[in-house]
Length: 230
Image 1 (tube, helix red, strand yellow):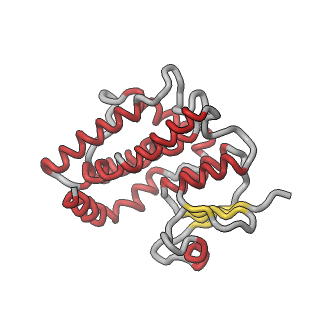
Image 2 (image 1 turned 45 degrees about the horizontal axis):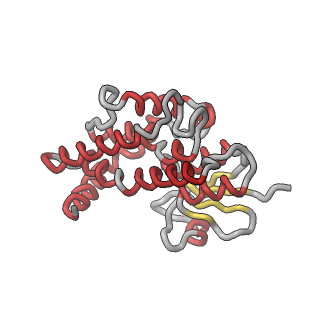
């Protein structure tokens, strides 16, 4: 009998979505426990006491696995099914590099471009668009996904571009991903959202907009603090 798999998550999180997609692509049954991050449960505090964040994966009686990209690698190695990471060592290193690039290089520029104004906003928008160009160049020619004909590790890692970026753009009234500037990346985003497996765990866009819109002032204050540190 297979050991039970439990995912501690919350509604509307792109990081929780990453893990759900990976589990579904591997065909792993799991139980999702949704957290109220304003009132964190004992379960979350017990299994991720340091960061106190989601997602957290529980597999059998093993200690918890935390951080979405680490969880995805664990899922790929721990369960049978289609591989999410390439088998070639060089290709595997490259998808890890670009997954890290998405978080380390794009996070700040995207956030400042969305929630500030003036020259600070314009400079960050240019930086973010240049980063999107670099990511777009990783799409294999003639293929639907970064993983080729099927969704792979890098597709999951940058999946927030496909769904959540548009949500934040709508709330902020700023457009960073534009068809005329990044046609291949926009096509990929549509393919990703339309994928049957992805659709099974993609949160409703209108619900995500409604849930995140009240946080706009918080996002603005965070972005201004980030800009001040640059």
